Every structure is written in structure tokens, then in C-alpha cells.
Amino acid sequence: MTTGARWGITIPVEGIPLDRQAEVARELESLGYTDLWSSEGTHADGFTPLAVAAGVTRHAHLGIAIAPAFTRGPALLAQTAATLAATVPGRFSLGLGSSSDVIVQRWNAVPFTRPLARTRDLVRFLRRAFAGERVDEQFDTFAVRGFRSSIVPDPPPRILVAALRERMLELAGAEADGAILNWLSAADVARVAPLVHAAAGPNPPARPEIVARLMVVATADADAARQVGRRAIAAYLNVGVYQAFHRQLGRDALEPMWKLWAAGDRAGALAAIPDRVVDELIVHGHPDACREHLAEYVAQGVDVPVIYLLGTGGDPLRACRDLAPR
Image 1: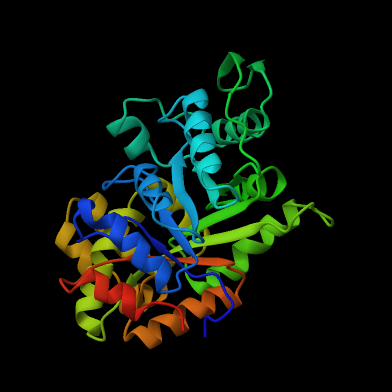
Image 2 (image 1 turned 45 degrees about the vertical axis):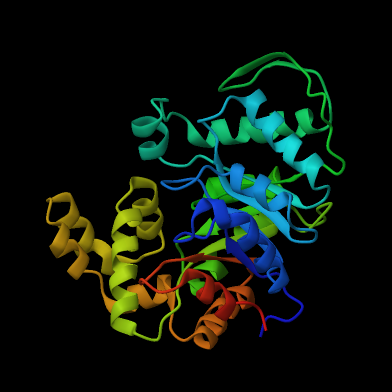
């Protein structure tokens, strides 16, 4: 049951050419998706798809989950976000996160140092930049000298922090407008979301928002879905920050995968991922079953579930239609 709730999906929809994404965004809004969120990993950058969607939508909320805290300079990030926020007033959220050493250091040649402090400093800088203040300050992890944005969006975009572990979750609640979660089960949400709300204090100006990016394989073929899911789990959860997160959650069932992956046995690592872990972390099944699973996340404290489609070779646009809110 999704009526009356926010219901998001990731853009651009992979498997559809980029030159068709404007018509896709228009259709997604017409199907009832309330939120269109981009990501920034191995596919498109995070802002261009939102700019495309901004030109063809009228009501859908647009967000990036996430802009890495290291890969753009503070002023450029502020300018880019302010421009988009002013283009779609009240319809844009900036997701900000440390990302990972792979994306930051290996791919972008930027030292991945003090990620928590860097994210905190950017949140503080962006608040001032979005308000039109002149910023001339030495922060702990960077300095900004004499910057003032000529674009002052009204309202300013909400800033959400991508968070896995306790200190980042607390930053999301204490200094940002909420948190972006990913790679966790519905039961895990009940453990981490309260940390965000507690950090916001007893009487926050606004309730922190919890957004969750959720991997979805829309097929009733459980074997095919689990095969796709295992590949995604292996690709992500062997990255250090995610591995530490799941160890903290007590997901001991992944220890065999981690050991085999570290030893270079990729096939063995995939085979070592138990079905029950795939079923916890990957939403799959008939579209109605997927909606029910996504609703479990909402019941545990997620305000905006955001579908990230993992394909099995079918028509991705049909999957978007099948998963649309009811």
C-alpha cells in the first residue's frame, strides 16, 4: 500500500538510452512516482539527469543520492546545487556523503582523509552559501576565501547526509536535514534511524527525513533475482566502509564471502552469499511482493523509499510501470 506516501525511483533508468531520459522522467511523474533521485557511481553523474528531469516535470521532488564530499570543490558544489534548487523551487534535495576510497581516491585522485570531518565542514559551508552569505573561513578540512553565491535559492535545498555508522548518522540528525541510507534490511532501519532522530534533539525545527535507496529486482524468478543480487552484494559490500557497516550490524553470514573475496576467489565469494542475506538486502519478486517489501522499510522509519532497479534483461520501463505506486 503506497497511497499517500512518497515513492521514489532512481534516474536515469539504466537500460534506456540517455537521449530518451526526458520522456522517461515525464512518464515516471505521470505514473505517480513522487521522487526522482539520481546517484553518482559508475553510471551517469548525479546532477545532469536531475537537470533533464527538471525541464519536463512539474511536481516530482528531485534529489541526488549522493554528491561525494571530495570530488567537487566547495564553491562549485554550492553553485551547482543552488542553480538546480532555484530552477525547481522547493523540489530539490542535496544528498551529501563521504562516498568511498574507491571513488574518491582511486578514481578521482583525491586523498580520502577525514571523511566525517569533510562532510561536516561541507554541511556547515553549504548552509551559509545557500543563504547568500559571504564565506571567508578556514574550516577543519578546507578553506574558502571570499566566496558568495549570486544565486540564493528560496527555499534553500534540504541537505541530507549519507550515513552508515553512528557518527555520520548523528551528523545527519544534528546538523543536516536528515539521512540517506542504503544497503540495509528493513529490520536494520529500525536500528539506525533512531540515531538520526535522537541526534536532532527533542524539539528540532523539522523532523529529520530518512531516505533509503533500495535495490529492486522486479521478477518472480527467485533464482535469477538472487543471481543479480549476489553480484551487487559482492560489488558493494566488499568495499571497506560497507564491510565495516555490516560487521557492526552483526551480519556474520557474510564472513565467508569476505574471506574468499580477499583471497581472490570471486566465484567462491559469490556462491558463499546465503539466500537469506540476499532476500534481506535485495527487494525481489512479483511487483506486488516488491511493493510489500518496500512498505516494510516505510513501517520501520523510512520516509522516502527510492527504488534502484537491478536488471535481469527485461524491459526496464515496464518494470518502472509495474512498480509504480498503487
